[in-house]
Image (cartoon, rainbow, N blue to C red):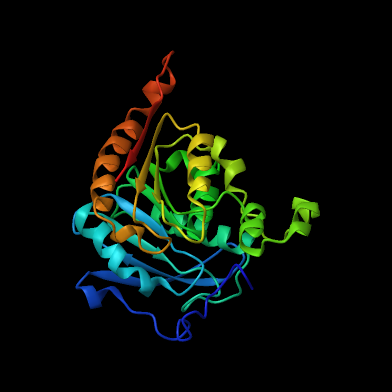
Length: 282
């Protein structure tokens, strides 16, 4: 009840705004996950095949229609295709929400893209905000899907549900409850070491829900040879994407990440690779 809010606001399971409200061309598709659940995805498509493709994993409330203005920014600033994924139990998707279920939704979205002939499979990146960040981390840490990704972008996401429960509930007794007792874990901090693809961390330092230190912890735990932490001084949990310099930070990262991806094989065969790290405050 604390983690998933598919009916907030109240009409979120009924009203899902489509990209034509923002004059973006799109396809509305229903795809099946490995466990047979039918989920809704909206694919906002550029004309050229060589475009970057971003898989967008949203937060724990509302539906994909509530993120279309942000998608418009990605579509326009990065000239990117944007695949909006509606988790099971959210919006028009079937089923009920669960950690394992959301992971299968992410895999189904990736499979959907990899089967298409009208996109460049070497230019697929993940974007995840809040809960969506944990879903993106899972997919990027997968030995099956991770190597096929050109980059990972995380915004205001948490280290784990265990640590978030201490922050939200503020109950001393929680420290005596073993981690294995938590039904939903989303252990992103443990998965970061397995992620080697270029990673951008977007952190609103005024985030009132997820402590900004968690973004720093994820950044520090990352073993990517190319990682960037961009901090936005006035960014709160839900509006960091509206801060000045936000899209500029993406425009700096994406070309660098793509260059890194295309040279990754040769770099991995070389000795003495230097890690490229930076922290920027805006």
